[in-house]
Length: 181
Image 1: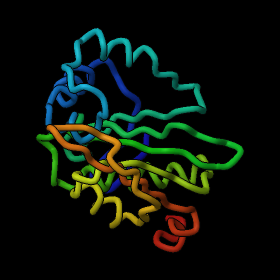
Image 2: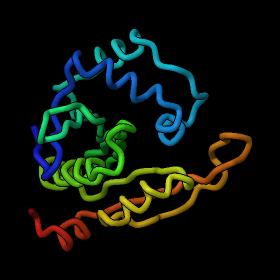
Image 3: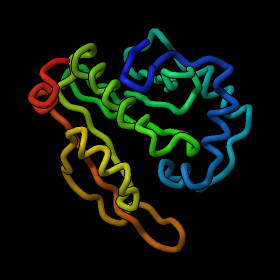
Image 4: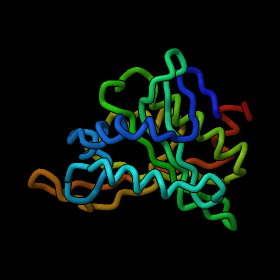
């Protein structure tokens, strides 16, 4: 279990699945996170995803995010595409819409970054975000991510094309900002 100021990152339980499914069936959240055709998630989809989690794997780490003050499930964050040789990985996350703008996302991601740099010993953490998701981009920039490039017109949604913004953070940037806290 990883502790932030407002959030706790912990292993998923089956009890989290109904709320996870409800969050992922919210079209606004899904539209910001998922590049495919927006289609509702079924209970069996969540069960299958849950069964695919492997706590012994060093290829991916998926954490349930809960609020520290009341231990309520608020979202998910994941480290994936871990490249041990080059010490890099990608991260992704979502916070359920009822919990937006309460500081959970930035706190959970800061906690996940601490895990990435100080526990897994990564040198670089990357993420991608759609250009229309300006709240997320601001959050990532405040945490220290730098825009590394823009992949033009990668997503077709609501009758128009949107760009994907590639962002990254280096261990040296994390250390300079956080001093190995």
